[in-house]
Image 1: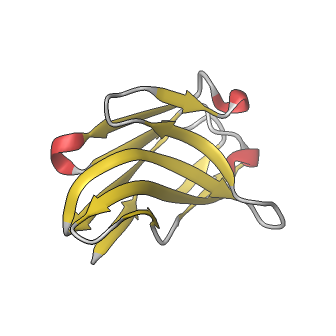
Image 2 (image 1 turned 30 degrees about the horizontal axis):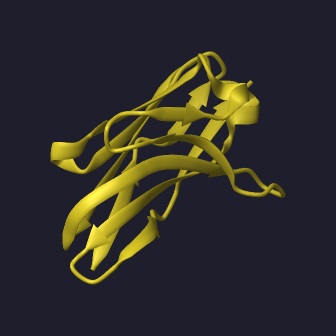
Length: 119
């Protein structure tokens, strides 16, 4: 079994910052890419940022400069630093990882963490 557990969401005022964390656990051999997606009410889930095992990152164009993704391979953890938050950043944020376990290579999702930005 493999699990992704997110933390760090919450309520913040516009202009504030939050840092999300996502830790993977279980029968993991290697984690390839890790990333964050978000889904606002009535919208499709969209990419926020992804990072390869060796550190290459890509971001949604609209979020470059405000959001920063990082990861700690030793801890199987990915982070998302979110600065200068806007009300339109309000969404459920999901962690995603491509994990090679003892049984298969597959994408896994976390349960999601709510981020609410008030104006």
